[in-house]
Amino acid sequence: MKNNVMAACFAACLSFSLPAFSDDGATLYASRGCIGCHGAGGNAPVAPNYPRIGMQNKEYTVNQLTDYKNNKRSNGLAALMVGMVATLTEEGIQELAEYLSTKIASSASGPVLAGDADLYVEKNCIACHGANGNKPVMNAYPRIGGQSEMYLLAQMKDIKTGARNNSHTLAMKNAMGNVSDSEMATIAGWLSKQSQ
Ligand code: HEC
Ligand code: HEC
Image (cartoon, rainbow, N blue to C red; front, side):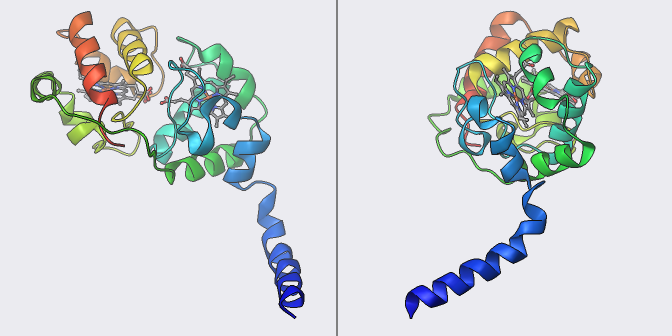
């Protein structure tokens, strides 16, 4: 009896979920191989310099995937991403970004060093990225708390030099003039320990 009920439910549920199945963000995330580098839910990257992409603002993620696709973001390890997004449709990009925006990281948390937080505030990062890096003032701005330390540092340097100049990076470039390499490293270390 129980088996019959389960079989009936399975068949019914399947027929309801099938239409959305093919372009669903979670399905695309697995079928397009994103999981191979960014890990479960986008938050278990396989290398220390790969970014966490789960729980990211949807609009920010849409902009980044579109820019990789159009070769507008070419700094750092962008070459690894270009092939991944080449055949994604605009709709597929929206679905992936929507899916990723709902994923919460579990492992990023740790002690907060007051002095380092001071630097984050003093250099005015907080004006755009908000408390702990995770309250950005616009949806097109990224969440950066709990992000990989190596990735954070590489992106800060590239935005400062202009090597990364896609989407809204210009807003930040102007604020980086008085932030030294060692200050960037300190802030990256602090940010990476914030809960996501
Ligand atoms: C071969 C490994 C690899 C695969 C597969 C891969 N990525 Fe990436 N991804 C990276 C790396 C490395 C970066 C950082 C690149 C850089 O330095 O700009 C990145 C960057 C990103 C970013 C930008 C993150 C940010 O904070 O700006 C997004 C979004 C992203 N990937 C989504 C995806 C999606 C969606 C897929 C599947 C369609 C995917 N990635 C497949 C390695 C990969
Ligand atoms: C005037 C606003 C503004 C200020 C101030 C600012 N940022 Fe940003 N930041 C941005 C925007 C906007 C982006 C995303 C650019 C894009 O659209 O690709 C960004 C991107 C980043 C990234 C890359 C994130 C990723 O996932 O690739 C890091 C890291 C970062 N900011 C750190 C900082 C730090 C640290 C400070 C302070 C020293 C700072 N930002 C100050 C607006 C700002």
